Length: 270
Ligand SMILES: NC(=O)c1ccc[n+]([C@@H]2O[C@H](COP(=O)([O-])OP(=O)(O)OC[C@H]3O[C@@H](n4cnc5c(N)ncnc54)[C@H](OP(=O)(O)O)[C@@H]3O)[C@@H](O)[C@H]2O)c1
Image (cartoon, rainbow, N blue to C red; front, side):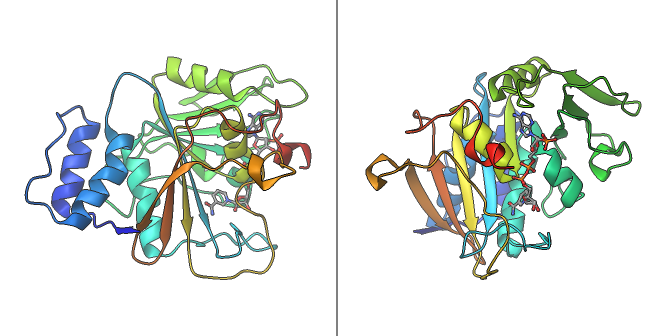
């Protein structure tokens, strides 16, 4: 496990990389600063190709919230700063409507310097109320992906995509977002939304930040199509980083998943 330390000079270099500057050779940096660069530079560097990262903040027992829905905050302070850093490095943050309804998230960058990304809510049936915090105007683009004909507030962009059995192909979502100018995406949750992108093999990286608390019950971070034998489990190449309060598993999930499904297991059981 490597300790990652995002000092001011590392963060300044990462924001410049995000804005198209040439990558800086990290001369004279400490090992922990270089580890931080290795962790975040792939998310920041613009290559002209899409980059999609999903992040989950979970407890030692794999929960992302309590059974009664309290999700604030599973991650410790360094895990939360990590989430805000990813937000600052991507073009858009994507959530499913259940997170939009339960957590009322603002999805802005507040714990680090940098600009807030666009906010995208996948809401096929139009369940998110128009006064939800994620739709409030604050200068960031706001996008709803929906299958129904429903008016949204001025300034909110609607991408209307067809659904089959209530499910919109994540590939169609990714294409529509790329056409709207969003190439670098953070899929922030919840588990159903992340599983959809993972099982459609659309993720480059999966970040799982584990915080040292035990919740006992409540939703789990990720539920994918089960495998019968451990030999068939998805075993991504993984780097482990110490983030201070939390431990981060940075998983490369670019290669085809062992098991794929048109509609992920978590959604079928929802
Ligand atoms: N700790 C963390 O990192 C973290 C982060 C985010 C959320 N959470 C927690 O996670 C829980 C919510 O997660 P969740 O997994 O239940 O739900 P979710 O992923 O937030 O939302 C799922 C819903 O979004 C819509 N959706 C997503 N992808 C879709 C697609 N490709 N096609 C059609 N519809 C799609 C569907 O809406 P319909 O239901 O209308 O069909 C689906 O049921 C909450 O408890 C929240 O607090 C934790």
